[in-house]
Length: 448
Image 1: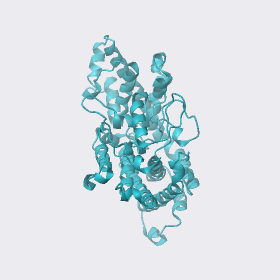
Image 2: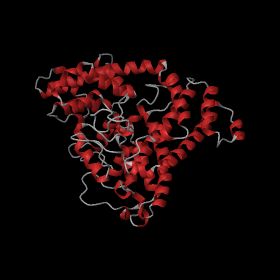
Image 3: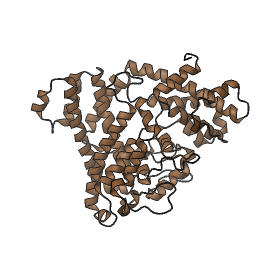
């Protein structure tokens, strides 16, 4: 892979090449990506989607929206630092093509901003609830009518693939979705493969999948434009990662490790003394003891250590990337950057404690259980109504239910797989609160 191709400004539907050197620096294409994402309805819905504590009423707990903004800020810093090193190593990128260090930051910031845009309500349990509706629930009856790969898309429903659809899917009059640059789409693709074969190798790029069968053709177009390296045989589709996808992943890893931990401390799920012991290990080289000892509140102490910890991890992520940049360009780096961090043991310790005290806390578990029931009920009711309408045997109840769908989801689908995925897409874009309200309406608990 080469950086000139990887930094493509092309957008879906373009008929001529966009050259960086001809770009208006006051309205750079990669920054337009950021703007389009942040103004999208799918992004706005993240303000009421779970990050750690589902349906939490505690105002300092992070939502998917605040998490995404923070990942974007960290991603921008990592991208700029890496960009500075890359421009120094390959000066022709600036001299001939006009690329700047901040371009890398803009791409990673936009992709990071969108990294959770396809996640369903109620956190990762939302993905599992959709998958299990088809795998072991009422949706099992559709299996024999779908191809193996279409079925795998549904039983292993993936927020990353759903996010690719959110960013790129066309509908009448809206070609190419948000029309994001191919460079940003490449950085967004943490798992550039289809749902089968499932986890064929230990390569980090094969851990999950990144696109549905309905988006396969465009996915391949993007990968080809960027010069990504194919790594599957036969009829299977898969590629080595776009290098900047490693930076998006690192920004996410840093934020959920440190900031979810901070939420757990502020909620009292992790004792402060215990937490300090873990965080100090990340910041021992940069902490100002006098400043730290002057802080009088738990929130201020934790905030100070969090900022230092993120700074340490950012610098280390950049170091690991630059040391392995040539292997990454050759498709020979099958690891997450933070797996090779000098702080990996400390990060693993924090995650282990978070899993025990936060992710498996009673409040989280109780509300994930509620989320399962809500999502599976909504899927069943709307899939039944949508299919009955297609087959011309919709009941009056089905017709009433379909009137609850937003206008853009009323589009006819003449293929069963696309109808099923269409309803999954609708449910996935609901906020936690919207899903709960709709569930109560359907169950006759909400009449006003």
